[in-house]
View 1 (cartoon, helix red, strand yellow):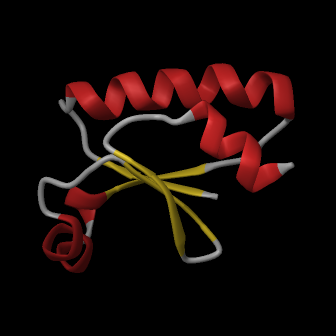
View 2 (view 1 turned 180 degrees about the vertical axis):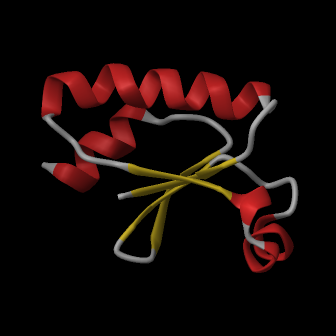
Length: 74
């Protein structure tokens, strides 16, 4: 699972906190990538972050969706 986000983004920070809380109960492993570190990701996502991907498919964007996560993972 990959979380695309950026620093100093209140949506990204809130999303990451909820994802971390969820991950503690599921042992989920997630890689966090700052889109500002890669120009191609900046142009792909722009201001549409955070984005959570699994196997190149978007699971959540902008807001963490616990119900969707449960459907996808279980």
